Image 1 (spheres, rainbow, N blue to C red):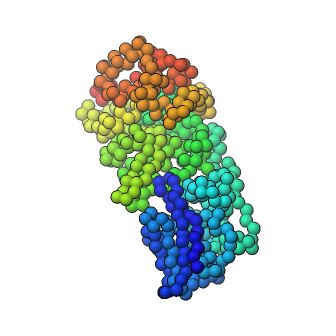
Image 2: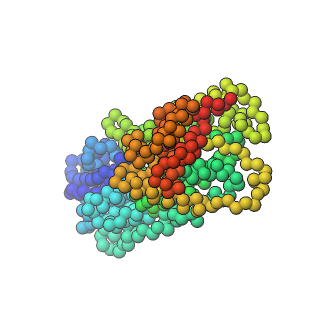
Image 3: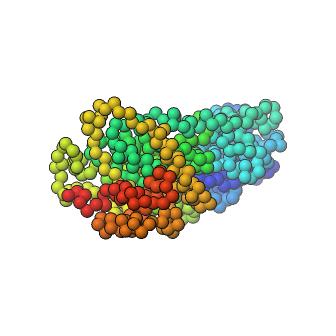
Length: 513
């Protein structure tokens, strides 16, 4: 008897349709898996055999051929256990059902017949809806994630026995409904534990981070140990605008494929904050591996990637950031296929100003020579530094400021201004494939950020004096455009250019002297 069961495969963060074809015939004994299965799928024979025994079902004493079609697409992972098991039960006439044609099945089987959660449920359910299927059966732990997709039933089941009874119409089922509370948390500022109101002083840095959040600009903070760089960076998500539904779905897809969703989350609604250790490898940062997985740059998509003590990262590791910082996606190629992961993140980096950490410190003397300072700064290449829009010097807070009772602005107050600026940009870029000033290319700058003669002359003089690159020229205009947006100004004015130039600290000729 021949049976076909619907399932899927993950390619990048998208899904592809896969049919599990099961044929039971004479001419031998055993279970044969074909269709480019990896070792995990080949081992499913043993899991299915044990699950059948412990659930009261039997593998036929005849030849069972299972084909994962299309046969030229390599299949990976344990999500095929359940569709293969259902196909075998239907092909051996241990299950009679009329629900196979309009259903999809995904899930890993334990030896006792219970179901374990799998990766990539959200893109698989989205694909099933596009195929016109009515329902997807999945492990119960994945049902909240699957329920995010509207227009299709996401049905969580706990065991093989339970699923067979549902398919045989001996048990009713109830589809999981999406509840926004099942996500990562509320989108308002009250969901954040950290707040900018807790940071004493540092008004200059807070202003810079507000500009960065409003325009999506990359930032590097340079300051002595204990000056508050990490504390400020960790509060960056609290002032970024709430994610749109499209951004939330894309971010959830990535975390789902990477297996980072857990068992109680539905839709991720808070912008991710990723802070990899400086010993992180190129593959862990950028993604890839023998079976490609999203890296930290993709897990930070629509959020913040924080590199603490940036010069401590390997130079080759940092250099792989150049392409995603420019293109905002990463393509991982193999001999027979390639996968594409989004990498639209805001980079926040921090570093000491010199090896001892006390260059430009107001009270402690630096013991480094000018040559040592330059060597230390050279750990970050010029092309990479050019891709960072804003360079901020963080000066330690004085005792007087730390003990001050002066009220500091809350993240909620700053966020309101950021959201207003982003609304201006959303209207400006309507119909284009960008949503913030940092994503503008040179042609867009001429259209959306033209400079008056006074501003152009001011910027040209600064370019000559500071010996800035052409890329830095564009970055300054983008930052100035964001500053103007925060003031709700339609045109860039000279003081906007002046402030933007002040955020290119590391380009100055006298740095380290």
